[in-house]
Length: 193
Image 1 (cartoon, rainbow, N blue to C red):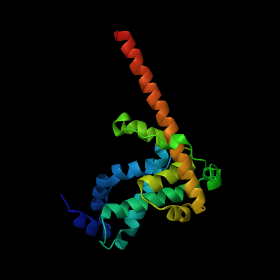
Image 2: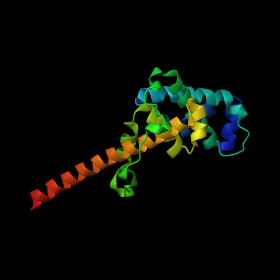
Image 3: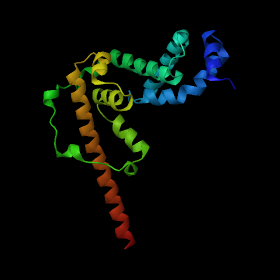
Image 4: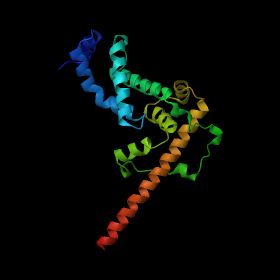
């Protein structure tokens, strides 16, 4: 079993076997990242392939500062963003911050155990594209709105409004899931009694 450093060095020398090992080791994690930015698995797989191509071409630029996995993730996020820019669909669902209104709904809290990972993934993945991408970049990847604005070529206020609207829509969808779960529980309880 090659260490990460050995694997990187062999990949820098364009060793095909090492590239295959690197792909096998990180493809699942990187595919999960790609899936956060597109609706279709086939699109995510295209981004995955494009991302690994970039990795293999640019691995010589990795200087060993910071984590290798973090470096990989940044390349895949940037590849997904490039894919987003190439898509003509991304021009919809951009709103200015002045359009966003907070409401009482914003204050609702959820227990972590209330929803499965798949339910949460499906809720986020069901967001309109602009909302989903900004939400992922800000809430999951940890980018600041200024960075998101530069990446997506949008105004910082647009990033903030998209994030705010994404949270509002997520809360609405989670409340719906919660009500449906309660309804099913009540029906089961009623049948038992």
